Length: 541
Image (cartoon, rainbow, N blue to C red; front, side, top):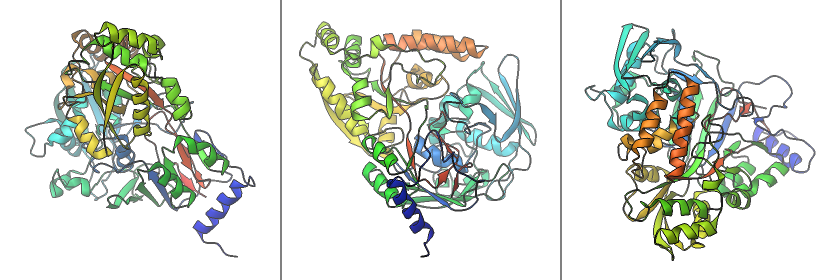
């Protein structure tokens, strides 16, 4: 009998289900495959939500950066070739800058642009192209300045004072002050990114339409997009670096978790993100591979500091103590996450565990509510999404919190919306009548805390959507940002963490392990300590 490729793979999965073939699991999927990697084939990925615009500087959400970073590259990148266990924080590596120097006082960054790189449209990468991109995100007087891109990336560029191009392949950035996290921020994505776009494409299509015609320098180039169905990328055969093994990658948005599993079992996709927690064991028993890591992920609540009830610190402390994080992690999410006991993720160098502030203690929560003047509790609302990158299963998780809080007298009504719509609402700031808004975020740099809590980044001008304002915190974070060494910065960030914890400014709930389920034919996939991945190492048998 002759089998087509897909039919043959269905047979393999059936054999795996009966235990006749063993699959490889762990953080590097397919690592036990025999023989050298093979080129060719199309990898189909079932993703957890629709992707935002294919404009890396505008796009919000990790699910968007997972797609965009295959097309676009920053000046400084991260090495994602090692799993979390081997690299708790991915090391930085040259991206579109082949090298760089930093002045002794930490205020001048000189980047040497990589020679011989071309955008997918054939135009060359040079210092002028990099300057064009930076000015698009930073310079309000620039003809192609994009307020949306600037809003998403303000945390990267707010310390930038000037930009110069001393020669055709050199870019020099001068900061207003020392800015210790700058290089790491260049490599981040999720709330915008610094991915470099073709200036020719921006000029041709304009800021509002260039996302429909994405042109970068990355290992994959854009083929097509049918919203709600697929985004197709093809290998860039002119890529400056190591060329990918895959011919194509297709991202299929499947917001319904059960639909992702069904699509995987039907061999319609080769891997899925965010499997339903109660499906992981059965999928592994059927021969599929589990890949998970320890990304800098925090699923958290931002309290509304403009709300008369939530302004009260005792109320915020009570809410933190009324939520059973361990119960959610074990009973609802089947240990695909860990309970969160700090505003930073455990992989972050500034992590400070605090089970006293975030452990489950409903009796103490009731006591604090009574002290705050709410012995019978109160009613409010919670904003969350129905899907989205890093959101895991947000509605059941919100309902779990709803049940926990009801036990101490707090009644909450859920406001839900789909991911892309939710991002827009969330970025506007938490509205009146809503006690808190939920989000998933985190970074490998402790600077994430500044992004989430700085008084200078209150929504709609930044991601501090609850309007938190603490001068003491701002001062300590400023000291961390301008520290002359990483170790000194980390100590200041730890101090900042303690301030946020003592003030109950945020309620961290869980840290995701970012599980993926893969077909046994997928090899070379690595779950790094980030919420995104490198598809250049992936191959299909």
